[in-house]
Length: 413
Image 1 (cartoon, rainbow, N blue to C red):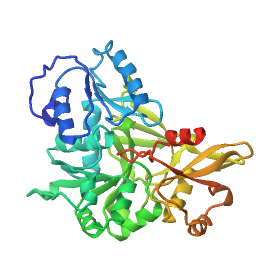
Image 2: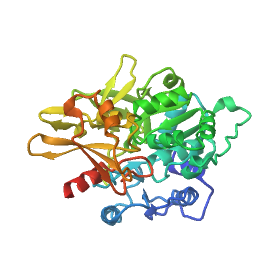
Image 3: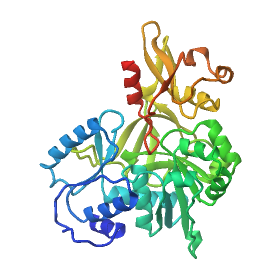
């Protein structure tokens, strides 16, 4: 597949000249407007930058510098012409280079792994993010249906109908949610209706962050076809995935590698990925090697199933002992006290780092007895020493928590 073929699949013909090297910046939160803008822009020969409309001054400043540099590099787009932002919420904006080849490989791998020829998707995640964008690509490349839908309407019980084709055995219907969205469904007054609708899907993908054990158990008890997976912007979305049948049988890992990818662990336990869907470098660099060493720690069982252990740079060292913040967060979530919570290590003169739990307002008073009961499952040095409410909780539309922003707020306080 070349760029022109992908353009044909993604939208109708238009007046843009195919040899135009103009730089296109697509900044749309409305799915229909995004699809229209992208379908036009892809017919040129210049680079395409996907922009989050919610970026603040810091990201905008970084973008301006990158675009100024791009003016001198517009001819270098034979490979890696699609720029998808990564790291915009971590303080350092980067653009990950993809193109029609990396996207097509990722789509074919998805179809083989889930044994479908036509992919249909209800899209509630933003299309300027890799999770929403690649979901649309899966439907366009396979001739399926993409239904953009407002998450708030789903939460309110206004649900799209999943129209099955005559040859339904050849297709699948899918949906992507983040863990907090699934949690909100379970507490919604329309929960019974929404849960019945979720059971109609061939797979409901959970991404944007790890699902905590209590939430996974509740989903399994309700017979929801969840798919836990692992992937990122750099890999054109998922490179491993757990099938719904495996989830309902009790598995809680991130599944095996999709057919187009190879996963291994290096001597430090970091996940390494080889795949033709791996990005082609951070703009403006170009790297066709497509071998990627992540910052994520993992475990592989004898059958090649991947379990994510967390980021190696997120470990908190307090009093000389290592603490995984995700482990502590899972216990705090299971207590039912918090709607959302994050655990960070802050500088402490005595212990090196002090464990602090942050949560969004408006909780006025914590149920300390309920918390203490659950915290007994953790060693004492892993338990938070402080609980701090935060205004304007910085979790974005695709479920990523801006831990760097939380760290800045704590530091300034």
